[in-house]
Image (cartoon, rainbow, N blue to C red; front, side, top):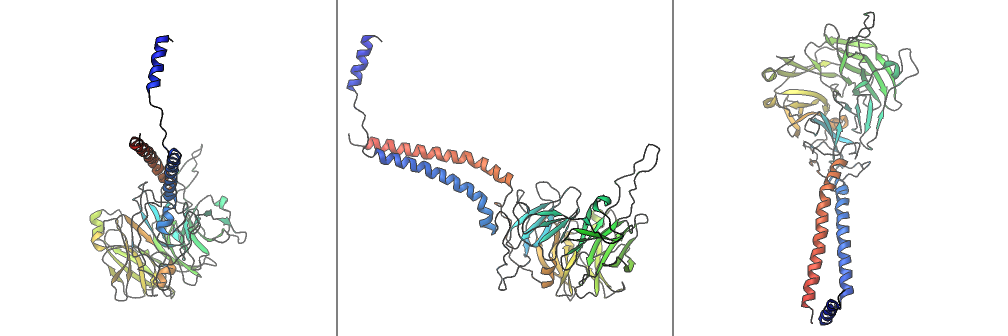
Length: 467
């Protein structure tokens, strides 16, 4: 370097004031470190809050839930007075188990825009149960702990575990293995003790196909089978083989010895109601339903004397909105021992869904679309009281299209419980991850802001230092 330049720089350096270090330099360094640690801790708290918020806001925890009461004087669970449509990102029952259900409803207002089950646990937690495309709705166990779906499979709402059922029983000439049956089973009804499931086995082929010589290989009109499945062992036995073409609805008798089953013939379309002996499959009696239908899984009265039948006048097949609006529904009763009429029918101003049970032993409880909303997608729960009037038990938001309530709660009359809405923080993993990706830049900005704030404070104090 040129000597003149070196000398000029040296002279300039000699004229500069020496670096002044503040007396509290060590204290300022510790404060800066504490701010950084506080920012990191804040980010950790926010992320932990996103995970634990469902536990804080719904009383549930990730994993098996603790069964609690509804806060009533008796501390017993109760059906909520109203249910709401869940969030699109609502957690599933398998992800965070809600515990035994107080109610289950169905809606298409989910992120898949398909029919989806929504379980409301005893602590008010909303959890989703996704159905496969084309899968029929399953049935709740009498105590609300299990949801039986096509397979059959049992979803344990207390743990989130799901297991498959359907092992052939080794006894009885009518038994055969599930692999031999080659068909899935559709659950229709639970026995009162929660041990047995009556299921329909669909033997229909999807269509007719032909071999190389033109021979028909399959038959879309194979008759279905009716099967009883032991939910404790997974074994099943055939009640009816090769009977009617399709079994649509079933209801167990209160003593569990008989089951009422509605079916439709493959060829002539005849609809029949039959009461079968569960032990032998023997038919006790049957009748022609016509355009009527068995009320539902809770159609058999608790005293064992009557069956509820739903009947309609007006349009019955392929109805448009005007046809639906012109329908006139009623609930009829038949003697459970003979099939004869048992009591005057009760007119229903709206459209019934299905009978879920009987309150106080004499009042049918059914899902229902109010009279002014015959063409809407809005379902509520009502009881037909002793005067033949409808009493609202559970209201619901729009887009709720079906309801199921544990039989034990219906028969105990435990309605009007707390009605918490779904928590937006009880979310699926992908929603939590998305929220984390959104929050990460915000947290980064916050940390940088804290650092700049500390830097400005340091500069301000430096300028104020004596000097």
